[in-house]
Length: 319
Image 1 (spheres, helix red, strand yellow):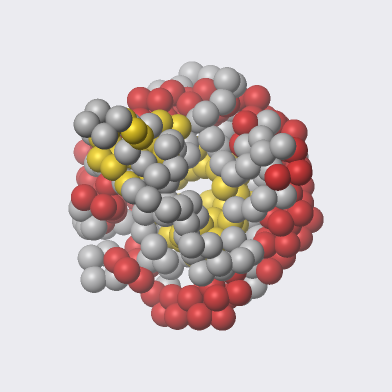
Image 2 (cartoon, rainbow, N blue to C red):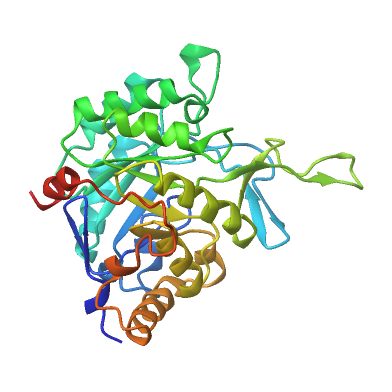
């Protein structure tokens, strides 16, 4: 199946397909090289990276739930220095667009990370704001519009790479969050991150996860994700990368029709390491079957309130 209809240009990044992989579910890409043509993916959002190495959370980190899973990995990673010196040079051989997901404890940390990653071989930066702000009593950046906006401003001040803000669904009004980060200069938003959940062991009388709560992902969250993409697509004029429970081409199509310009596959990579290739094939077949010549033709097609990109935004991407 030809990918010609799937070619897209997002944030100035040439993508063979609009199918990416979500951070935390695909390692650094190289782990899947025997199953996936990494260069065919629109991009690989690599494992969350922090300034210093992190060992992650203690105790049970993952538990399966009906149609999904809970995780509390705790951002285990070797740190940005190791990523830049060891990992990034090694994964260049696969010809993939590397999008680095970063996390920090202060807005300034995000800025420093963005600056360190402003190097050849990095296509874009994704800001994971589902982290506590230690300067503001531990409130999660992604639940406070101004805190999230401050993170965007810091990142934009330190990098020329496109900056993508990953929106948390654990908010009262995701539209307010999206508008705030757009106003702060975010080049795109990705959504949704995981939903906060927990599970209790009824025989041991205690929470299953070592961290008590964890992030819920998988097919069970897809209806929430599609609804939020739909809402955000009616509120902002920057590109949306939709994610949350995508496990088939049909799932992906829903996100495009709601207003996403690209999609990212997460939990499904665990159950089928070849799923992204199957989704690419399925999307190409869907477009051919319905007479569409490009993926852009279906973006927002089911959403009457879809704003689309502003003319200025399109010009920036082309430039």
